[in-house]
Length: 393
Image 1 (cartoon, rainbow, N blue to C red):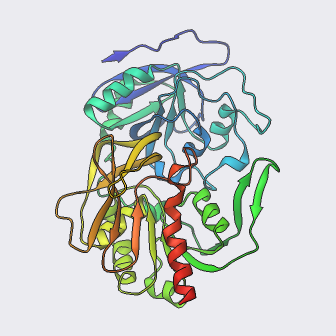
Image 2: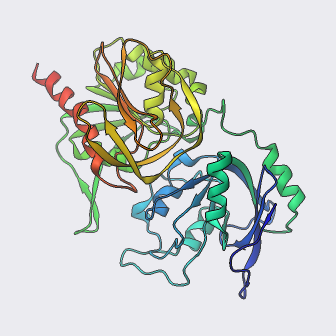
Image 3: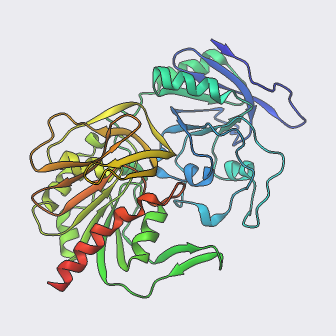
């Protein structure tokens, strides 16, 4: 199926681009991102994100590794980009799809345009594309493999490349995006008044963070809550972590199939036999569930956005949350040692769990609000309060 772009007029300097989906659909648009002389295409799993803001945070989130992101909000790029809003030191996203790229970007924090950011970070992107039609296809058929091609366009070749992509099932991507060596994190949360990040001098709790693709703002929030953060790679053995004598262990967000991270599941299983508090977010949430005997499953099109309602099953309170995940904890065969505490009001999927026999809990969404609302920020507090309780004891 051919889908023409909404505005087919090419201006001076603009080049054509296409998006080919594995189901045979071809979208036409213009190239606005990176153009490689040697490689004229990029392949990945095509997903859609419904957030209205935070496009730079989305592009720099390691959880989008091997994915091409469609932003459903029509005008993307009108506030530009800046170094402070990056959520990692490197981008892993395989492509960006938008409807309109504004001719003018304006913000007092802007350092470069979105197009300049895409080119600098070698991200292929396509604009002037009917993102409403594309989203309808993804909602109906589920996430599809796709190929962006922006030079020497060959529709048959692009379709072939999309079909050849193996997808994310059984794919361990945490090991691809994790840090090369351990490091200590110092930076606190961003202060809009001073236009810089706060530095916390109080370090009450020693926390080891397993980096499965951690977002910087998660680390900033933990730092602002008086945590001395030691970040280690995804495959660091548990004894090395225990030798650091942490007050708590944090399991970060990240990309890929959690069931493929057998080393992480084994490490967390061992941690649960200690008295050390454990807290996980996103992929860390799924790994905690697997280490506890639960199962995970691939979702039809995942949750990607900043407007997802999540309900606390005990208090019935509803939080509007930021989400980014394509796998979820299965509600089938939940072990007795695990309790489901929160669910999505969109589709009823599991959003949070806690262990009943030790202090370990996790949350599926992204409570760090980059991008997204701040409702779920309190999810961090039980972890902090438990470490304080242990310190007092």
